[in-house]
Length: 132
Image (tube, rainbow, N blue to C red):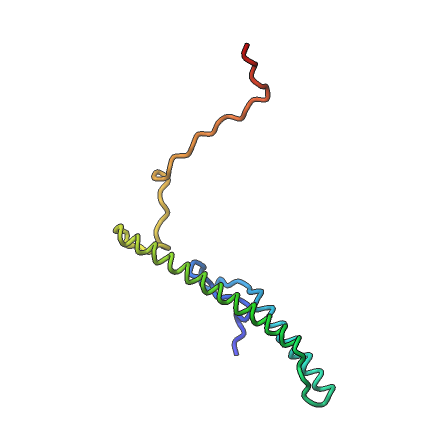
């Protein structure tokens, strides 16, 4: 069983391959599950029989699993939205005659950038003289 990437989210469409980020929801779910399973096993060994799991423990485990599911859903929808936006950019590029992929296209040259505003000199420390 491969455990690589157990606590990390898969890279997004704009991330380089192999660049995964740690997932707090996965870590929390893993820790809660191991702690509860370990304590249950310990109590069963002490009692010599299977014991009932309290409802509060099941509720905590359910909340932990729920946060994992919500985080997974949010991450999936964000990746889907990024892919859709990337597709729209590619469609615009194809419509304009630029068939290069959006990720591989070069940035716009500085000459075509909008002119920058001139900066004003800082105000002087002496106020202007009042008009008479």
